[in-house]
Amino acid sequence: MVKNKNQTWRPPLSDSLRQALLTAIFVSLIVQGLGEAQQTDPEPDATSGGVLRAEISHSDTLPPLPPGMRAGEAYMNWAVQGGDSPYGLTNRPLRFEIPAWLAGRWQRTQSMETKRVELPSGKPVKAAGKTEAKVQEQFGTFVDGEGKIWQVFDPRRSKGEVDRGEAMDIHRVSKYNIEILDPKNVLISVTATHLVVSKDKRMVLKSYQDEELNTYTLTGQGKARTDSSVKVFDQTGKPVLLTRSTSDVVKLEGVPADIGSGARGSR
Image (cartoon, rainbow, N blue to C red; front, top):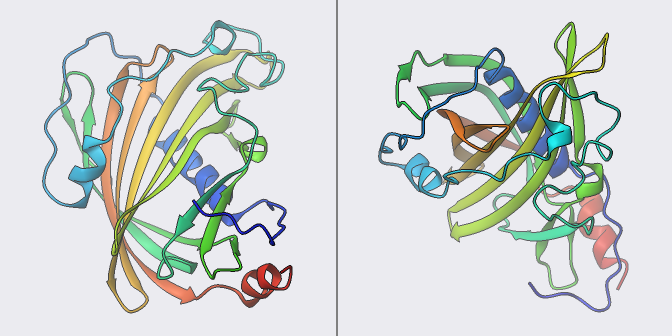
């Protein structure tokens, strides 16, 4: 990545981070009630298309969670549990260049889950099918002096919570990456750690990890398709579930004026 020496910037709570947290929330709902798997058989083969590329990149296993983050432990806070940096992720904000066509605000109104498989057995489970949900995503945190568009991810502000009634799903994005595959395809990878904590006794009832790979494909002027592959791992890092889904997104607006003008104004 090329840095502009004449530019100064401060990473905000970016929409990319909000998107990553929304991803973690979505996955937390997928795995609700999912039990731990005890086998170690390989997962089933992938199918063709954008999801195939994403699934090939999935991790076979993930590092096991620290003892303080496992089921049966008392919960105090994320740092005390040993979860500040389970993957060696520093607290330094990360920057990723994105193509001009991806920059801006996008909206999806529905998603189609096409496959759901228990792992490691490979047993098919009925997919959720079409889900109606209006979601907006923003890409592009700032434009540098050379006109390149960048996305900022700040690990220090990557926590979130989901209320499950008698328990809270407390999660943190531990890995975030954007890779430009070719002029029309971008892969966004998000890994998150989840602790399901009881509200009354503040005990960890369940802990798990998930890895989501989203391929954004430009399909036309202001139009794109997302192919998502989500792999869920238990507290020991073994895979337990794989889902695949697709959706169409429409661009509502391009790069907001304040992003571009703010960066160039600092030259």
